[in-house]
Length: 314
Image (cartoon, rainbow, N blue to C red; front, top):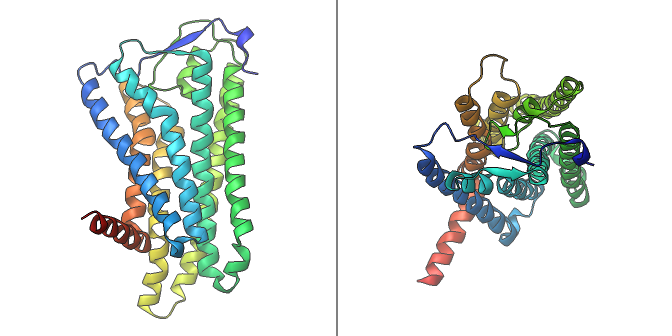
């Protein structure tokens, strides 16, 4: 499936942090703390949602699925990156590289699809409140989550199969800290590399822009509906239910646009590495913070659960 018989390369060398030799220990400690916070933050959100019956609603079901996809996404990249920051040998086997790309794209695009579904959920809640229980039934919500995971798996399969069916017959040094598409394409040889590069780029950009446009469309209707609410308190309450989701969308697609839509020009290893960190480490780190602070109901429930636990322990 991955074209092993067509490749002369059995392993790759990840050299993403080789240009920061004196900062590797600093990076290791910083990224380890951010990864642990991301992991614990998402687990705390999930535990709060599952333990509190008042949060057993579609919006928080989607948030729980989002936390799961975020945990898997970071697990596919960051632990390996932390090991490479400490270990002098940065080699990664061919199949391990393919697996990392598959899981990172699968959970990354699952994240984007779930954000789109959450935008639709907010649209239905504000624009069609009387039909909300019908349109967002438990079965319907489960189907939306399932299709998000299926869509993410499809994207991961398409991209990984396309890239690793290429022939790698030259240098094996990946100018990145993970098995990312652009640096891998630079190592491929053959007449079909340009076609694959354009095809993969078109598929990824189309999926991301499609999700982003659907979210924008949802919020266009949401804003129109909110402006029709007569009281300022009602408008504020309606918008507050969307604030955390909208903030995460801006952060998610803002950093994604830096990766996928950056203009072509002179590139440096340092620049590519730092831009990769923003999307791989920083975005997952900010997501649980935003949902914990910007979602009032979740924030109050988490605070109550924490205080109750602390009180019982004392």
